[in-house]
Amino acid sequence: MNRITLIALGAALSVLGASCSAEPGQQKQPKQSPQQEPQPKQPPAESAPGTKSITLPVADVKLPPGPGREAVNAACVLCHTTQYIFMQPTFSRETWTAEVDKMRKTYGAPVTDQQAKDIVDYLVSVRGPKDQAGKTK
Amino acid sequence: MPSRRGRFTGFEWLNPDATPRGLDRRSFLRLAAAAGASAALPFARNEAAAADLVDPLAPRGPGQAGAPMARFPEKTDLILLTDRPPQLETPVKYFTQDLTPNDAFFVRWHLSIIPTSINAETFGLSVAGHVNNELDLSLEDLRKQFEPASIVAVNQCSGNSRSFSEPRVPGGQWGNGACGNARWTGVWLKDLLNKAGVKAGAVDVSFQGLDHAPLPTVAPFAKSVPIDHALGGDCLVAYEMNGRPMPMLNGYPLRLIVPGWFGTYWVKTLKEINVLDKPFAGFWVAKSYRVPNNPRMAESPKELAKDTVPITKMPLRSMFALPETGTRMEAGREHEIAGVAFDSGSGIAKVEVSTDGGKTWSDAKIGQDLGKYSWRVWKHPWRPSGSGSYTLMARATSNAGETQPTTPIWNRAGYGRNIVESVTVTVA
Image 1: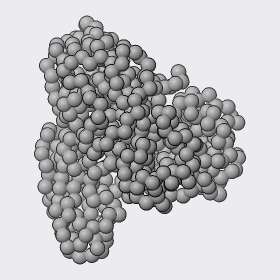
Image 2 (image 1 turned 90 degrees about the vertical axis):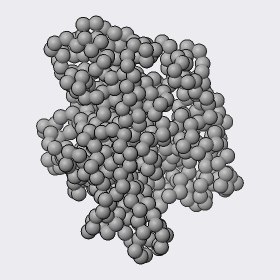
Image 3 (image 1 turned 30 degrees about the vertical axis):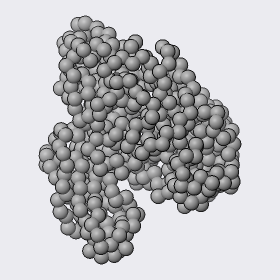
Image 4 (image 1 turned 180 degrees about the vertical axis):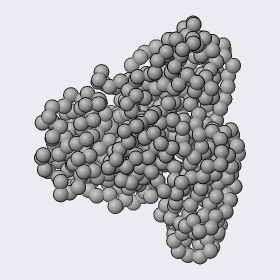
C-alpha cells in the first residue's frame, strides 16, 4: 500500500526553562529508520532533567466545499480537528444527527439549532449516502 | 482508489513557518516527482509514483486502508487518525516484536488540551481523599522512597479495531494497531496506597492527569477502579516504558498501568490519586466507556442494552502482523505468518494457524513469555502448495481454557473486538 508520509515539522525535544507554555520548536528532518529514536538527545533517566517540551504539529484542514461548511469551521474546531469527519465511513443522516446532538447535549458544544442543521447537512454531503446530500430536515 | 471531490484540498502542516503554504495539487505533484525516492523532501516522503497520492480527506477502507501517516514528536511514522487531539495508530508490522518500541507505540488522547511541557523537578503526584496521610510525591520521591517494580503488559484501546464493526459505528476508526506491549517500570499502586493508609470504607480510587477540554462543559479526563482492584490488580504507577521515560505523547512523566484492562484506565500524566468513600461519579466512567452487561459486551442496533457496566478486562485476542490482507506472495518458497496473542491475565497456552480457511489447523510457535499480562508473539512458517488465493487464520487458546469466538459481536461504541481473524493473500 503506497502512502505519502507527511513529516510533522517543528517537532523537537528541547530543554527550555521552567516555562509552562510550549515554545515553537526547531525544524527537524531526521533521517531515521522506523526503529530509531529521533535525533535530539534525551538526558539519562536517572537525573531530574528539568523541563521537557514538545511542539505538536497542527494540520490546517481545508474542508472540501459543501453546504454548511462555514458552520463546521465555526463550531466544531473550537474543540477538535475536523479530521474526525474524514476518518469516518458513510453514515446516514440519522446517525450524523445523533452525533451532532451528542456534541451539544453530552459535551455542551455551543451550537445553535440552525448551526446544527447546517453541520448535519455538511456531514451528510461529505460522508453521507449520496441521495441524502443537500437535504435539510 | 480514493475519490476526489474536485480540486485536491487535503491538509498541510502549519508549523514551522518553513512549510510551504497553500500547496495545491499541481505543485504537490511537481515537488513529489522531483523528490523521487528521496526521503529528504521536508514535508512529504514520496514512496511511490505521484499518481498514487493519498488524499487525507478521501474515504478509507476498514482497517485504515488509505490513511495518511505522520511523524509526531518522539514518534516514528504512524497512521494518522487526528492531530488535535493526537491519535496515532501503530502499523501492525510492529506486532512481530515482543516489545513495541516507544517511538512506534500508539497514541490516543481524548481532549485537545494535552501536556506538551513538563518540568520534571516540580512535577508532583498527590495521593489524597479517604486516607490516613495525604502524600505529595515528586518524581525523585517515587524513585527513591519506593521499591521499583516492572511489569510487561499490553495496552489496548477499548475501541481498537472499531473500523471492522458491522454495521459501522462512529468514533476513532482504528484498524488493529491501537495496541502495544511494553515493559513498564515504576511503583506498585498498592505501595502508594498503603503508604497513605487506606481508611475503612474506601470504595473507589480515582485517577486524573492533565488533559482537559477547551469547554468547561466537558469533564477533564479521569478514571476510577474499585478499591480491591487498586490494591490487588497489579496496578503500577509507571515512570519508565521499555527502560526509558515514556514519550510525552504516551504520558510522560507518569502514567497508570492497569494490566489486563483496556487502555482507557491507563491515565497519562498522572497527577492525582484520590481514594473515595463512595462510587466515582465522573463522566468517563459513569457515562462513557460503558458496555452491555453480558460476557461478550454484545447488543444489537435495534435493541440497545439498557443495563450497562464500565468496560474492564480485555477479551482473549490474537492478531496478525504479517502478511497483511491483499499481499501478493511468491510461490515456491517459505513465508512467515506472524502476529501476537494476549488475554486479560491468564496467559496464552497456544496459537493455531490455518492456511486453508479454517479446515485444518496447526500449532504456531509462540515466543518468549514475558509475563501473564504480556502478549506472546507467534510465528508459523508456510510454504504455499500452489498458486491461488489463500485465507489464513489464527486462533488463540488461553491458559484459562478459553478460545476465541469466530463470529463478532456488535455494540454501539465499537468496543472489544476479539474474533478469530483472517487474512487473504494471493500466491503467484
